[in-house]
Image 1: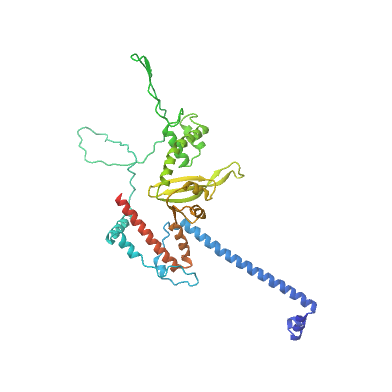
Image 2: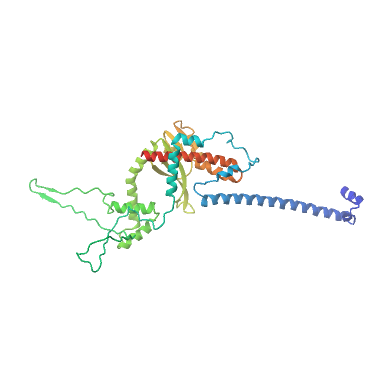
Length: 394
């Protein structure tokens, strides 16, 4: 009421013709309008923020899919203006490392020579690529129609053709003749050679083929059975192949345990995990998400995979046991839990994972992100030179 009297006294034209009831109605509409406008502005801001986040996420995935593996960056970006609105990164005042690294490894002349050799190797050769020397060769000689023994060869034109001969089954018939020995009045027969599966009809070559097709080429057993039965009528069936694989895995368990022993006795091991879909009839979807825990001993050049139903710390903890040495992982928290009570294990992280975040920061803080990437590049350069030196020693 007070506002209405004040507006009447001021004689504002838009309100002077309104009654008090009409004025109250108008102010109510104005209030609703202002509230609606504020809500719309807030929604617009939310959409803009979401759009920015979506664009940023899409750009990150684009980099992961289409970006270069090395994630190279342009060194001249370090000369761009500093965005002082970003938080400071602790790279100011650090010593220059590039010249010291080169002097501490090998003479600069050797480095330049190796770089020049590499640049020559990277030149794309012209012409057709030569066929691999590891492939077996069959030689066919074609003589002229009017050839006779009196001709003297001058030279030859050689043409190489890549061909394929389908694999085939064969039956190995093992005969052990039984002999009667009149001197000893006994019967002699040779012992049966060792076979992969006791009393099984599958030879080592067939079992190796099935295992490679299943676990390397990801061919289901039923599809392999169809392929194999093309060579004859009902040679194998799915259940038989499954039992062969089970018996073969029991044999390979000996090799697996030996590899595990070597990995756990190494001084340096890398660990990581990845998802895998596992068939599960108890689930509505028919499958659940399992995990393959991978362990790599770089110096021994050994890789070992273990399956776990989850991603909890209990899986790497059970595998590592009393491992003594350096264990390298990404920043997944389960590894911190594993290493919390292991005094004989040293945890180191991965520069590749850390480097990705500096690459992402190029759009917001180019100068300091580039400084970090330059130093990481120097670390990679040291590793490359070390690998070359080790290769020469080998």
